[in-house]
Image (cartoon, rainbow, N blue to C red; front, side, top):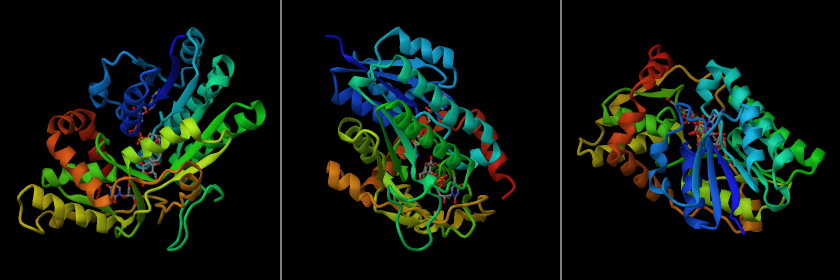
Length: 350
Ligand code: NAD
Ligand code: DAU
């Protein structure tokens, strides 16, 4: 019998590349197809360690191209889909919401339709990887659970909320076997340096200003990306069809405290005087509609599927910083070309 085909969309991005590598290594009997259009955030350098694996295949495809997607799904049996492809950066969504509607909403519906029409839906599932930002913002107390009403505040989170609703609608209307997860902020290797941590690491290395939005009081919950990938693996195989799982690190940090911690560690690693990098901190205009706090109650996932974070934050954080310091070429490649123009347009006005 031939191997089951699982499509992982967005597998050249930050989280997707960790998920693809995990599935390729752990499941030699599955054929893993990485479907990615390679936007600025997609990078095949993230996948070099598995690119020659016999159970791995890369296909460059835009998920909004329904003709191409349908043709691909009808060309061979597709047993399951793990859907991560997205426009993922909140700041970019504030500048250009339409792109987020196209990829995150239209692209998701194109995939749902293709899987419903051509997929071997009795032998897999459509797993939609989503974000805790769909729930809006918290005050000082409380945590998001699977029951928290949706209240997205940014164009990014509105597009992800919409895609979540479509996925759920395909379950209710067509009985498509779906699962959804909503996760908090991931940190780890291979993250594009538009997001807080790799951007700050890159700037500290180059002794450039560290742009902290507002007063840096906003709070995020941080999860080691490999722990997210582990949760995705568990939910894909063991999650209950039709259900949602929230995923988090139980690890809340005020942005400014996290940046201070990062500066301190980087000073040590780069053999600089303690306190040198903190001097680079610059408070800049706040993000529009900036959600104050995210926190996750992941007890459903813990109780039902036995998942919990495996890596202590101090350990994961050091490992992450080491990776960006040791992988200078990777950081140089992704910050060349259009990155400079992006950075200028976002940060030159302070
Ligand atoms: P990313 O921006 O690093 O990667 C996105 C990937 O999707 C890239 O490889 C890109 O080329 C691909 N892509 C974008 N548009 C596409 C299109 N039209 N067709 C095909 N491929 C396309 O994103 P990430 O941070 O790895 O996030 C992955 C998923 O996880 C997203 O759905 C995001 O909403 C979700 N998520 C992210 C976080 C986080 O902290 N980064 C947390 C929770 C959920
Ligand atoms: O919560 C999950 C979400 O986490 C994911 O769905 C998103 O894809 C992912 O990008 C992330 O969203 P955030 O907006 O929380 O991440 P970001 O790294 O952009 O910002 C983290 C915090 O740091 C946020 O409060 C804004 C702040 N920030 C960010 C940048 C880029 C700064 O203060 N300065 C910056 O330059």
